[in-house]
Image 1 (cartoon, one colour):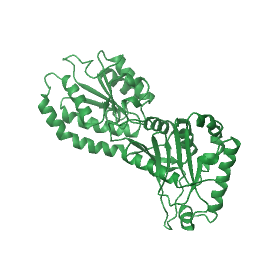
Image 2 (cartoon, helix red, strand yellow):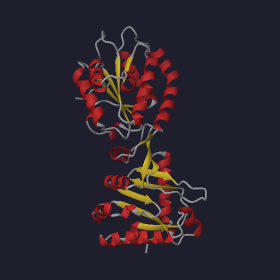
Image 3 (tube, one colour):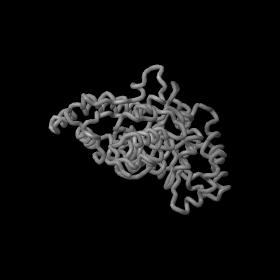
Length: 375
């Protein structure tokens, strides 16, 4: 059954109590900001957030269960990396079962309602953007009796307090998160979908480490449905044994319209380009070895070499396009202006239909057109 905002209301003699559910660093910080912000709108509201509401020495599990039984409204703080987190689903289930007339509202930061999966899709969502959040505020206002604010005053108060909340949440959205398998997979799945986004805040994820790792490549290759593009140097890990199964199945995918483009740095690029790309004196030989390794993998699986090309320009970043998601990491240089290692570097994932994401995609396609097929 769908529990839409406003369809299920508390009786007038009930106190307005708000349970803030979170999972993961960005979600936790969003819940913290909301726990401070909602009482500025509604002075009589009571908020509960585990990070701030559980006293030292208390059994946290028991405290959360008690709060879920006592509170009637659940705000689920959803981000691209946690939209199917089991803990949040568990809390929503307990809240729904414990309250006679629960109001469960997923609040989406950087993700659209159609991008979430699982049980939380049963509840009407609120996107973290000005108009939609005000609709939620009006809904909460309707639950109040003696403390209900007239809509004109409510609007004025919201207009005054919204800029500060937006600024704080914009900072929250920039928080770096750990690149574990679930988080990377969730973000790619969410942001790789096509469609106009109503929300600009949080429409990305900043990972503290993990770029060019086998974990990252495995998730990217497994999740790509329509296309995957690579702008790398050696692309060595891509053709390691951990990913041979992908190439064994690639021809079938190509026959069904799958698109793959892999850009290597050309071993015959200008010396200045090669020197800035890597500090090793034998770097051109390393590039040649990796290109030949890729050719062996492709030949073994009957794949045309045209999916791989060589470029001769200075890179400013390394990137991977997965359907409508782009993972990228800027190139960092040492004191001798030589590129540092990319393995396990921090990286960002954004949607290709954002302004910057589209710019990165178009830039890649131009580079591809100007590159040469490996021979």
